Image 1 (tube, rainbow, N blue to C red):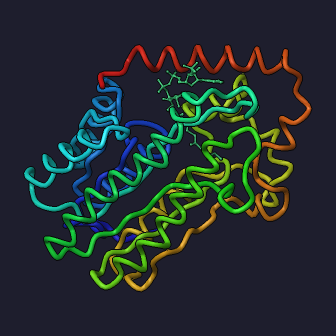
Image 2 (image 1 turned 90 degrees about the vertical axis):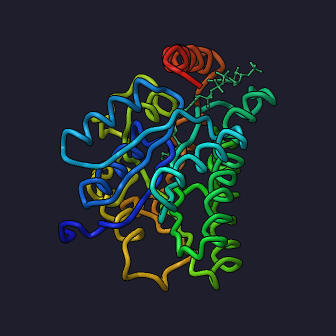
Length: 293
Ligand code: HXC
């Protein structure tokens, strides 16, 4: 879809770029000539992605960083700036989420998600934005949201609240920083199944199971290349006047059937939820065992 080397000269950080949607976008940017940085909490996962992208001829480096910690974010951004100059782009992709009845959430459960999505996205955006303003760089930010920012999402309330906040950050800073040439846009994907998300949002369902796609007018889940293309379009030169926008890429799911978890989950019993909680916890424990920060 795009000419080779479209992103040559771009230096882009993708948070949570070691896996899932972040890995897809990071790989695509590298394939199109950008120097890519990724960060995440699991060094081995980051290392695997670095090897894969490097073997395909891409330029990529990784930093272990928990974006919930503002000092760690600042150190990472400082290191990247020293490594070869300013970033030109940032993708706020790192997220945390799990389905749960809101009545069963503890304050710590709320914080586990909101500190990654709501606070972490701000910390990274602020660390890049302040440097872009000082350096006179026309940086570009893309945040990965969901369509729930428009109609809410029962059973994933901390995520819905946090992503709605990042949507408003996108619009606010597009206006506040527009005169510096800094752009902020967002992508609201529908179902693009990934292991990390599905284990927490549809536990027990395979990522290639399309049985839930009856509420999607296009009749199918999203294909990664479609998301990769939109992430490139928004990051490339040539749409400099496009800012402050959140673009849904969901086959019209949220327009037709809400695009959230109400239909699938509102009839579950407390016993059902006990089982789901255990499945999600075992996923989280396995991931936690690999964390290096
Ligand atoms: C209720 C739960 C719970 C569950 C955890 N908690 N899982 N509560 N139901 N299933 C509670 C714990 O009991 C604890 O509170 C608190 O949350 C913190 O738990 P930790 O496991 O210690 O948290 P932490 O290690 O910080 O891990 C954060 C996480 C984890 C969000 C819980 O899942 C994570 O790291 N996820 C990253 C990857 C991810 O989530 N990817 C999916 C993104 S999908 P107490 O009070 O007991 O101490 C997405 C949207 C996709 O963003 C859109 C698709 C359409």
